[in-house]
Length: 407
Image 1: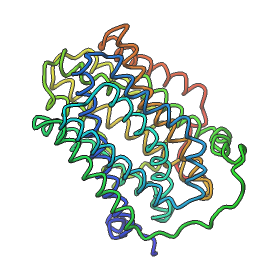
Image 2: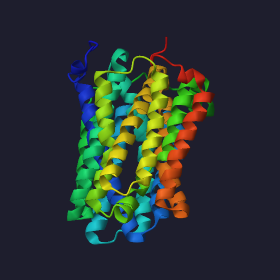
Image 3: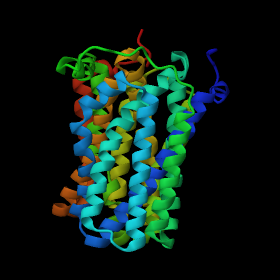
Image 4: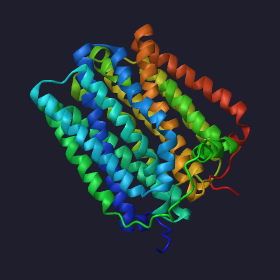
């Protein structure tokens, strides 16, 4: 495959574009699913604690399966693993559609589905991350990551918005549409022309499975980048509490919740599209810290806002600032990782992402139960700024990092 040197050339690589569309459809379905699940559980129980539990129950299996998932992605066909994960989520969406249609949705069912979603995503995320570097040349990987992230953010914009409006027709309709999108993504992944790595026959020893942790621990800039993102989003995330803000503070309905869930992706899409066209080539470390600091400030603004437009705008800024961190972190991880280890390293990276998202949702729900939704998000935004200050002191090599690619 000839190495493309322009953004336009990336769109002419069939395997990359199939991957791109699969990521978009799968992400849109996942976002729609979470909007419907969040609204249903809060409508059923009215509990901030239960909203947080939905996130925790997705995170725990992902944490427990980190080591076997990374080993499996390095040992078996990454394309088939990704397709199986999308197929599992399609089956779960159909189950939820049947439950909503038959009016037997329950708190226990939503929690059980959350656990199974966590199992599927434990394997999906490392497989998805490890596939991309095999589809494009290393020279354009940062652009490909930005373009791939743009697909994700476009789906995060469209998914919740569509899900929120479609929810008016009933939860069963939302879940049915999710199932169709997951199946579409599965078919696209299976259509990717794939050259699997040579099979690895070494035994699955503990040392081999822990290699991803060891690799990241020894590379301090990578450790600093992934841990900064972990703690910033863990503390500053407000996603799990959006049903409370939408219903009780901003006084809107499911459509408003969908717009609020989409707002961070609006900013992320704009930034990722810009980074695909104009990638960060100098002062990468400084841009990383600036992005996370802006994320914290925007989170504080959202916590204090009682006006829908301002709340939406603040969430747009959080998404754009977070995307700067995402592209820099993913580029550092992928550019410094040998292909034979990408599954295990991506699995560790995925658990950092999962901790910042699903565990962050639980943290938000738990603190909201004690401090209220506003107090929880406000404290998280302040905590994010504190983390930035500490990491700038502890990871000076990351702060001074100039270029993403190693010299």
